Length: 329
Image 1 (cartoon, one colour):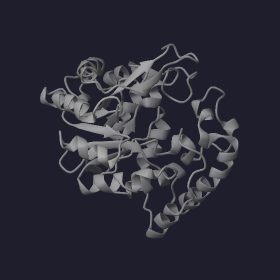
Image 2 (tube, rainbow, N blue to C red):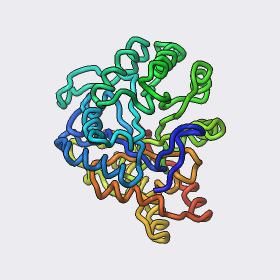
Image 3 (cartoon, rainbow, N blue to C red):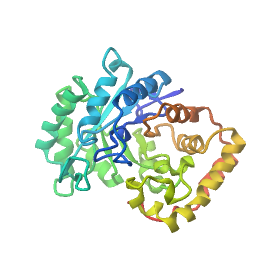
Image 4 (cartoon, rainbow, N blue to C red):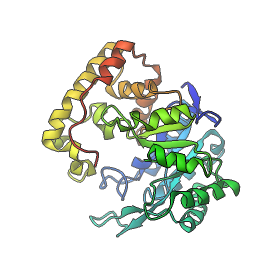
């Protein structure tokens, strides 16, 4: 896999990373909560990602909750830590039960400086490392001035527990406020062929200022990979059944999007997932998608997107795709 850098001056990474959230399925995070976790396979997938050059490994303290970082830590043990650019997140607090039941936890923003200071030590312990390469604010807490939260994260860098810090789901105004306190290495937000909001302001700002942009859900939660043509394709307990874009009428409307993607995939000799990722890679030098998967086959497929060549005409067709029917959440 070819490489880029995590922003203008940050370390080298593969142009596609690995999001690990789905490896915690069966609990509070992940789509199909009833599918048992398979840590052995997840560990193998993380190590295979490193072998393929997908070196940016993204997790968060609340995934699992908390068990996702442990899985990543075990995958990076035995000399693998140095191969990874390790990213985790802080800034959410769990509410409710934590047993995978219907009362499984929701998450609310918690940007209190004391929460940041205490959370990094737990993350490092679970990850089995003395520092992370990227520490990200999962969500901005509207109850806490961003400058206070970001200042506490800057303290984590000063203490040597994180090499750099990033933001998630923010506006340009919020990025600028944070930059006045400490450099912003990355911004992580949803971006894909059916979620394009960051293209208007946030992504151009990041490109202009040498900030890495990390698209999560780059495959539209599996839809852009062509895996679902009706609501019946989703397991009964799958959380996507509750999302507006997967409701029956909206899903039928959105099939027009995947239909055009399939046409291009057929022309370029790739899969719909590879075309969707290749389009993202064409959006900027520091755009590093982090598709989530827990299967070796999908990992290899995603990595293969770096070999897909989209012409100017292909990109024009993809740029002109209709907007998705239904909201993200």
